[in-house]
Amino acid sequence: MAMACSFFGLDCKVYMVRVSYNQKPYRRALIEAFGASVVASPSNETESGRAILAVHPDSNGSLGMAISEAVEVAAKDPNTKYALGSVLNHVLLHQTVIGQEAIEQMALADDDPDVIIGCAGGGSNFAGLAMPYVGRKIKGQSKARVVAVEPAACPSLTKGQFTYDFGDTSHLTPLMKMHTLGSTFVPPGIHAGGLRYHGMGPLVSHVLELGLAEATTVQQLDAFAAGIQFARSEGIVPAPEANHAVAAAIAEALRAKEEGKPRTILFSLSGHGHFDMQSYIDYQAGKLQNYDYPEEEIAMALAGLPVVG
Image 1 (cartoon, rainbow, N blue to C red):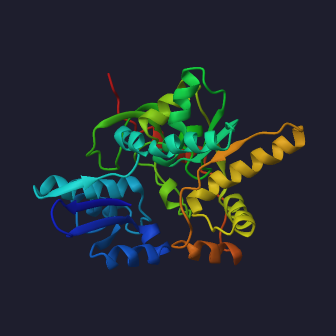
Image 2 (image 1 turned 90 degrees about the vertical axis):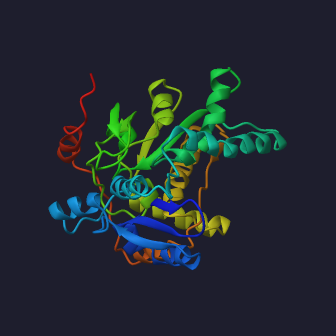
């Protein structure tokens, strides 16, 4: 989601990616219960939305499109402020309280992770857990592998370019140097809506380029299979986004078992799936599918990258 809201009072409007708007009615209901209004993006309420719909009237939307609409609304109204919950470096750093607490908890357990895993869409959840450990690696205090897990349907770290790009579809935001699939990239309608972003946070991208972290992908069906396994083992139903980290953690544990080498694996369970139960219903009914985004479509999106001298 992208959000434009009034700085004072409870007058708040949320531009929610259209595919998520349709897939996640309970999230909408919760937002509306607190007085906000939710609009499916792209919408006819903004110039950005109307321009997209004129070309793609049946667009499922993307986080880049929702950001464009929210930024436009905020820019035109002096009483409106824009808040982005991921990607930007200050958000990533704010989230590092997660990793700082994890370090303290691991110390209480008298252990230290060999592998650190987090799902990655814009980068805030992954960075929140991983960055404090990356700092320890730089200081020689940790040798842990740090693994970012993204959907195979939206592979910005594993197939994108590390270059300057816009953070939104309509090019209203400043340029950022990041791993990107191109601001016009529109991923398939997978249920992990929080991971459907064309780029990755600059700090996460930089850490990957330095070799301090690695990236891998998980297919949608494998993610949900892991979520079901985790729920039946631990009693917690993970969110579709978190399922990607769960799947990677399970794969890492099985690899350690095969190699006969014990490993301490730390991963981020970034959210519960109570507002995403329709995705589990669809998975159990066999309605979900895997996606490998075609290389030619990625190439087309990358062809539109801005030229920076």
